[in-house]
Length: 110
Image (cartoon, rainbow, N blue to C red; front, side, top):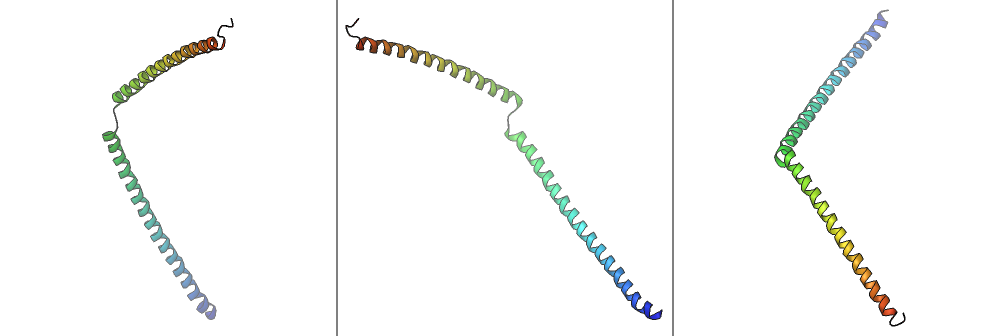
């Protein structure tokens, strides 16, 4: 019995020491990782604040955007009208050229 206690006593003490050591290391690791996560979240928060300020400084108001969109729409309408006018002029010119070609080909044959 005494031999059994002499062998098992140090083994149990060693086992308890290992468990305490592992728990301590896990606790330190978790503390380090939580601090890293906290620092990352703080950095992200600062970047979001900077972005919010940057957007407020560098972008237009809703009225300016609406005016820009309205002017773009009117430009597209005007461009479409000019393109339709050019197409009509091209069609009219083609008809004239076709008639001239037909007259040239049929010189006196009618």
